[in-house]
Image (tube, rainbow, N blue to C red; front, side, top):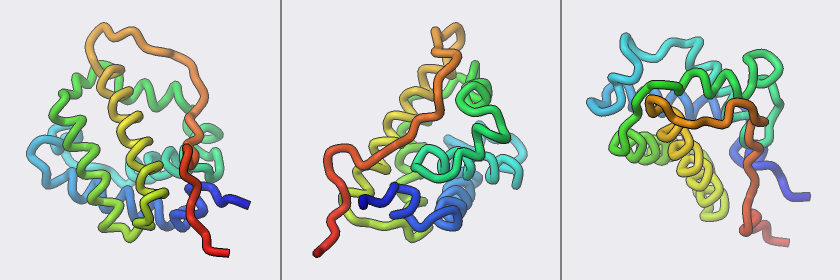
Amino acid sequence: MTPTLYEWAGGSEAFRRLIDAFYDRVESDDLLAGLFPGGVSEAHRAHVTLWWIEVFGGPADYTATLGGYERMLAHHLDLGITADQRRRFAETMSRAADDAGLPDDPEFRAAFVGYVEWGTRLALHNSQSGAEVVEQAPVPRWGWGVAPPYQPS
């Protein structure tokens, strides 16, 4: 059986390392730190970790305990994210994946970067004042796409 991206990455601990590495970088980034006045709280890190776990095929705890897609959308409305911030976010997340020791095989990283690009572009759109947004949707469940992981037989 093909593992989920969540399983391939190393489970909950791997995603927590990812999110901590990401926000550690964000807090010292001149372009992104302003989106998190006063720094990134432990609660925020824990909630975002649950989101990523669910998106990548792990337990649906973000939906069960925090409100799912609608809650994530609410956090982005009217933030006014810029195109430069979106690009920096994506670049920083990719670097954080390296920092956190996530798998670096091309298949995993293609799926990972695919989600980062999709999610940041959606967040950019949804953050603009007066944006027409999809108000209700399921949390995305990201998969391997067209290139499943290579596993020697």
